[in-house]
Image 1 (cartoon, rainbow, N blue to C red):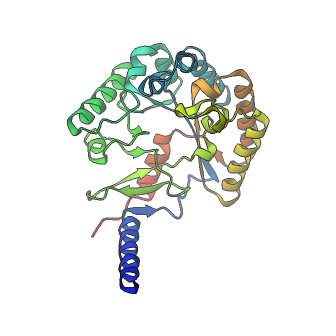
Image 2: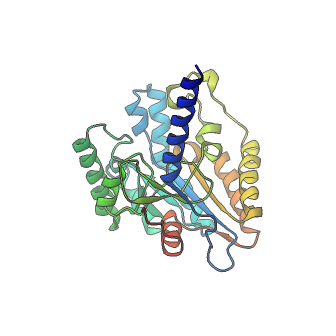
Image 3: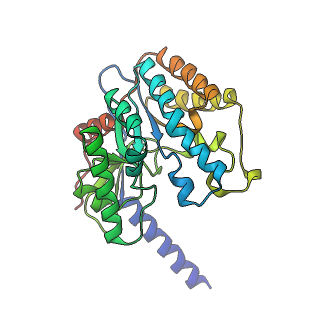
Length: 294
């Protein structure tokens, strides 16, 4: 029994060390002069695509469609009114369904990032490569720029083939960091977000086909305090925050009003930077590149 326990402990330790070796933290992001915190406002422009992938009922599909017809426009107007440059993670199919909205976001200087072809990554390697190529081409064709960032679980080697600089998907740290695939030599920058600052966790009823009893429809004032507390904690220590929004959720009028007050309160403090994710990525890569694997 003792021998088995010792072996298990040794195997767990070996796995932990291997996992740790794949992650490189950036202890000091060294933001530009005068900047205390970088705040990325990001929006996952899913519309009804994920609802269809999950075969959700018509009311859920209609809720997603609101994001493409109304919500995204309200978010663009909100960000533009504050001079905030957001990153809109956009599935390739959305470029076909709501091209005017995607073009408008790009014209306003917001980054259009990849969010998969139809909000899923196929398990088959060839089909995954096809999906990624189609998504990249759709975004470039519509905006005139190839995406350099993604929010997805695409294979890192495929992302590198298409010139991606960063992913914004995993959250093993609160600061930007590098992640290397278990079987790959190169690390890719990750800009972490967490469900604790994701609007869907607070406002979306019947989220991801779960039971209604598991869902929340929270008061925007309560969420304002949660988001502000997350910002204030990082502001005090000088750090990073990635706020994840969805046009079909945060595009509702009361939530837009809450975000308007939140951004205004952030802007009232000195040293708050509202860049795109691409700007943060290029800054990190230039000033804190990943260590070479020996």
